[in-house]
Image (cartoon, rainbow, N blue to C red; front, side, top):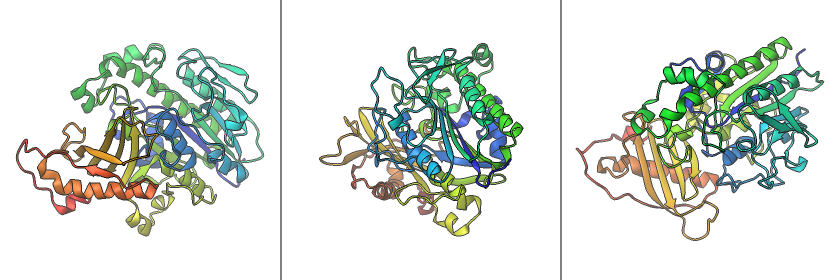
Length: 458
């Protein structure tokens, strides 16, 4: 039976590259359910995280704010007591709220993976854990219930999470629901730096493994880890299909908004010594699609969409007032083909990143990626001079896999001038101090290249 307000279900994965999906060119047929959502619903083709590491990205998704505003720079961050989340906003709008899976936003002791009730941030029904990377495994999954009791989840880990979601969907409710399912896959298993796929799938994909061009050129750990990674992605997509089937069988599918996305990508140790903290598309570009009321038939959205835009969009889709404190913006008007909003929509996204030793800011347009960094900064101390050095410039049209860093090439001076201004403007909008940017020393390593003024604005 339909409720007056649409239900909302977020299917959230961890560390999933955008090009694992068929609609982004992966030929291995890993994601037929996601691809169907993207084709029949709304596909945010150019979607990006606002912070390519677990905790800050999740905090931005929940609050609609940038990680720097939340003072979250790495995985040591946590939501403050007075910070409201999607759980709060939907709860206040008369929804029953539920969270299943990895939370990773609470101040708990390292040895205590449970999340106390005061840190559950607006979620009525709870089956979660603060961090699952070290205390659960592919075939040894468990979460904690409302009372903090350990609940074993038989089967492969993402299947166990999906089973819990389906059990929740089968319960009779007199209110619309807001449910977030947060999987660990395809994140690596921290205890052994491995990507444990369902039994048999790693062997299958090892014999027929497509490698994205950036990984072909740069190597890293991709040859060893891609088969398991792909097996995890495939099983996630099957779980998405099972959940959609459950919604269909309970008569809730047509009145449920489903959002599929992830927190960040994975560069397989090609850009630095770990997997994600970099300004490259392999880290910051993510898959995102929605279906259900307001999103069916929305088509492909070409505008630049950020993870920070998710919270205001979902509130907007359900007729809930968007708080002025949110820094993201609803992309519902883009789906409705609002020409004025389309013209005014930002032509770039801002992302923040920190690998523990380097703090970075990146602005990404359709054509260009421009990043600045300051070394020896964890991001937690904003005192003193706010000085950065130019680090990266990529022409995403000529070099879609970002293998040629043009930051020191004198043929790109005008591009850098424009991108530097755009980055400063976006940082100011977020509330950060105006950075002092030390320009890269120019090198004439090859022939002069002329970039038109029109090209710099794209």
